[in-house]
Length: 447
Image (cartoon, rainbow, N blue to C red):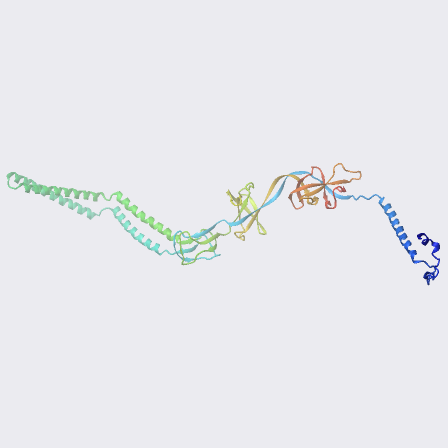
């Protein structure tokens, strides 16, 4: 049945009594509708075969290998690198003091306020000194008394006193002679029995008493004639000197009742006001020295900075030149660093408490290679890589095959890095265009 339907000789044969025996209007041929069923697939097959033949011809053409031009350099090992280390510190004044009185008392006046500039020795505040002044007057009076006594001792006894002593000696001598004469007569009378023994004893006792009084009067006269003893004069001088010391101590207390600036500076803090009763040592004012600033910077123990050397200190946007004045002998407990003191001269605009930075060039020993930053490409696990020209793969047209080498970055600079890894001395690495190539690619070095 199928074969009969596909026979072209049967296409134009009309079917008697059927609707297909009528010819189509405007058509030269009367094609049955089933004739299009086999022509469509046939045309599609012809098109597919044509494309297949064309594709097979193109696949037989060998692919064109793309060779990239790159810049290279030869790597050499380095044993160290120089870097700038920045160490941070603080600007301080060379001198600052919390000022107070050495004794307690009522604060009667404060002569300065915060922000005032003062010169060295200028009075700043005073205490009430009325009790000290009263004590001073009392000591002056006592000293005058002791000084007068000393003058008297140094002058010795008066002539009138000596004359009176001599008269007393003569009088007693005469009385003694009279008593002795009476005793002689009574001894004679006693031997004749004219008087009693008692009368003789009375005159004998009177004679002895007069002799004793005469000896005492003579000793007093001799003392007056010899003058005052040196020991009494020295003792009196010591008493006067003791009063002088008490007066000097009182003068010191009166002088210290006025608080004075120990150096030229600026009043930074006023802690109390007038009328306050303060204790000894209590802070009243804080003064900060003008004109001389210091930077105190902590450095590691192994970093050496010589005292007297000149260093550049960066404070804010400006850089100042300073001289190292000292390196403190003890380590700072919190940071375990050595404090270096740098004196900054000619920088009055710097304020105490600002941050100071010291930059020092250090040479760090290391084993690695110095490469341009353009030679690095990202690697795996946070590492970096570089492309090297594979040794022994040079062809006749000057091309190389690149290999990937993993490296670790040790130090970075502006345009170079210091790395270590699987590189070998003398190898040539790709320094430009590394981001355009892949491992195994053919490249041609331009230099």
